[in-house]
Length: 100
Image (cartoon, rainbow, N blue to C red; front, side):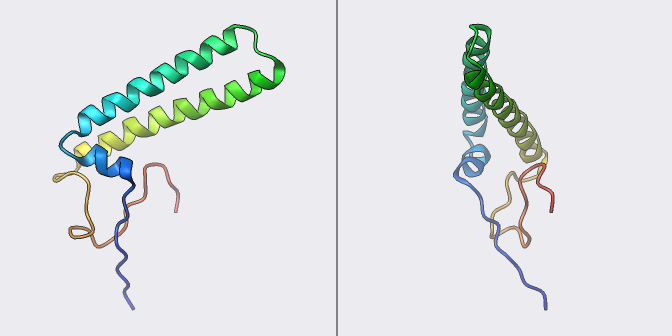
């Protein structure tokens, strides 16, 4: 039996795939860059051991989010018609770097 599942997109995926996708991407990249600066400043200002651990984890999360956003945008740009929709795609597309 062959089951076709619809592709489910997050709000962010839809916004990135929209005609304003480049603007949305630039806004998110700028925000992630700003968050990284804030976290680095906190680390450089002598954070307590607990705050240091939290800031390091947050820094890694922000760096990972920026990397995933960059990869995802590259994937969308490489598709001939942008992000597939349930009407044009018979199979779900996992986000980048998701192992199935």
